[in-house]
Length: 120
Image (cartoon, rainbow, N blue to C red):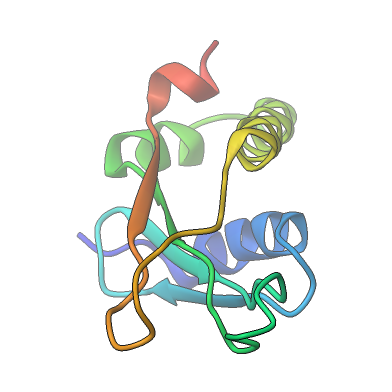
């Protein structure tokens, strides 16, 4: 079962501003999980001015999405806040740099959001 476009748009609007300005942010709309991939130019290596950060893949499980949709607007707002905090904490701990050569794709890091995170 695919997520509805309204929920995808909502979570995208919550998450995208949390990442560095100019980040590429792509959402896979054909998934039962919410799956967003984001990366940005690091601008830390003069020899590689176009070097891209590690790719962060944010996955909100289908179970968490289903639970979210069944909640009241007030509970959804609480979950939105928990989701944003989870991402902000992970961004603060994240080292976006890597040593992959320019001919190799940057490594990916998955941040998985399940019901236990939103229900905490």
